[in-house]
Length: 264
Image 1 (cartoon, rainbow, N blue to C red):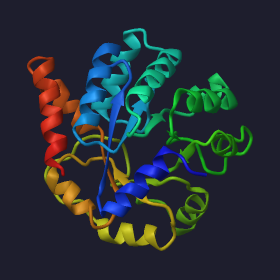
Image 2 (cartoon, rainbow, N blue to C red):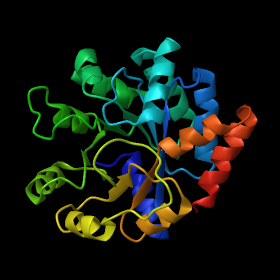
Image 3 (tube, rainbow, N blue to C red):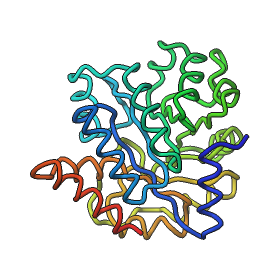
């Protein structure tokens, strides 16, 4: 299977470049502002972008993204709005693969097959559903993703046993999303990421697809630590924090842009 994620990762590999993946919550702080933020992120060098479908109980997310989820829902954003938004953005960003990030309740309530079909039709390249177990077979999530040319991106943490890493690695396509810590998303301070080299070595010996690292990356120093060990750095909460710190929207977008450009 070859899709936009494969093409992007191939081009990064050929250029010897490290990938950057950013994250937005669709509808935060509004749909129109989401679009401007997304376009700014893409224009500032993001190689892949997660579009989070707002959810009431985003169990893997810390305060920054949780608040954005709740604000988006309060704005009245629903799943169908996210599909419409994704389709419009995919037509504008033909060189930046877009992925839906969501939680298991949403595709299961929507209908897994319909969710995969409509995601592919909207132009998405993959799905990140952190609370779906790789052993899930009842709804055939994995097979339906592949059948619609979507990469089902699996998530694992440093607490995973070697046998579980092997299980997830055997099913992984596109890339595997590893977390820099056990717990939830959220920017960290300037400290180094503990145990990163050993964690990367455990993954590299058991996983054949490219590796992304997220959860807590918030600075150029963090990305510099990650670059020699992983293929992609994921910047989520830090981008939203910077946006929130802007005195007005222009300052917010300028802050996000300046940060992402500084990572190259």
